[in-house]
Amino acid sequence: MNGKRFSEGKARRNGFYLALAVCLVAVGIAAWSTYDAVQDYLGPEDASTDPALVEQQEEDVRSGQNVLKDDDPEAPKKESASSSVPSGKTSSAASAGAKLAGSTPKKIAPTKSPSPTPAPEESEASQVPATAPLYEISTEMLYPVASKQIDKAYSSGAPMYSETMKDWRVHAGCDIAAESGEQVLACGNGIVKETYTDSMLGNVIVVEHGDYMFYYCGVGEEFLVQPEDVVSMGQAIGTITAVPEEAAQQPHLHLEVRRDGACMDPRSVLEGKN
Image (cartoon, rainbow, N blue to C red; front, side, top):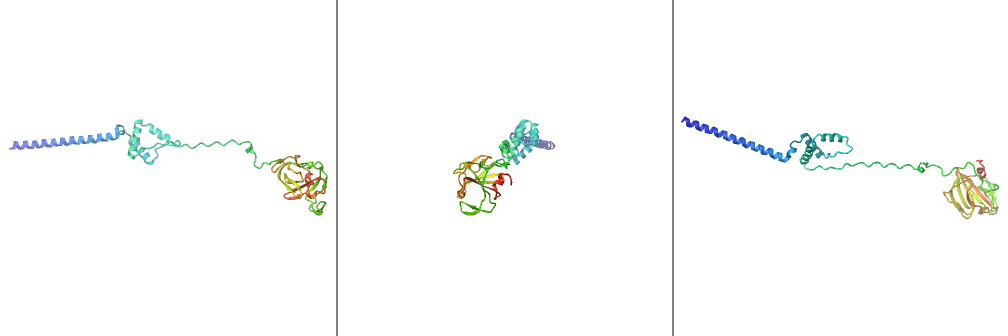
């Protein structure tokens, strides 16, 4: 009876150990299958990837800052850090980071700011001051006709009798005797400001000579100069004809001079007395 009980107890123990062994084998098989599946997913190289590098790549993908700029001061450091890892691991880490982020990082070509266009060299003309005078102001002046004879003087605001108009009126200039058709010369360097025809003074040429405006009156049927022309002392600008309001007089040039709009004695200006 005791022998039978001993046999039954032994059989139960053997069954327990057998079941335990089967369970251990099953657990080992399951663990191996799980390990093998993970190896297939990551690949042989991904399994050995540096976890810190994978984390860095994942962060780059998330932030969209995985592109190195040419002028990034940290670029040399990043390059040296990546160069210390084998090329196979680096590419695997990038691949793993892309899988974790769910998208493939795109490489964007760095944009280079255009180099500044060199300023053109200044020409000699551009170096001339904008306020440079168009002509050199004459320090002396000459009479506009060969004769220096004054037929009728400047009246300084006082009325004078007009033989042509038969009345008394202010003589705003002076009449210089000349030959009909004689050339009228510029009294100095200057610039032509205006040309016009007046019913009383005939053809009139207004020339700026420094601070003075000269009105050459009765100077021919056609103008020899035009507005904005720069003239030099002694240059011919017209010819002697007639001044309608002084037609009763002998041929002459009627010359008026003004400064700041006020009439002046032409002879005093010509002779440097003003």
